[in-house]
Image 1: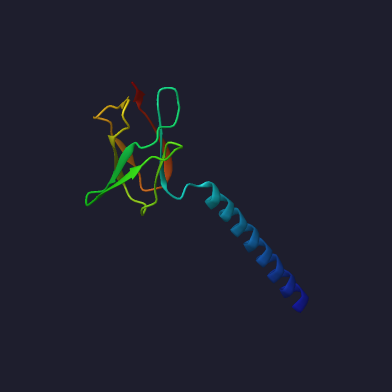
Image 2: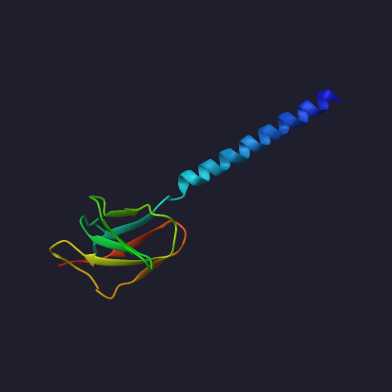
Length: 114
C-alpha cells in the first residue's frame, strides 16, 4: 500500500512539473508588453516615432527604438493608442486610431516616408 501511494505521489509531481513547464514556455512566447512596430511604406523600421498609450485617466508617451519598436509595459488595460509625432521626412494620418485590448500583444503602424 505504501509503495502504491509513493508511486502515485511521484506521478502527480511529474505531471505537475510537466504542466508548469508548458505554461512557462507559453509565457516566454507571449508578449509581456504592448508592442507597436512602426514601419514605413517599404517596411523599414522607423525610429523616434512617438506614440501615446492612453486610458481615461492618463497618457504615457513612448518613442520607437532603432528597430521601430515602441514597447509599453504598463498594467494590462484597454488603451487608446495615438501616433502623435514622427521624424522629419515622414508623415502620418492624424486621424489614426488604435484600441489595444486588456491583453498584451503586438501591432504594426505604417507611416509614409516623404
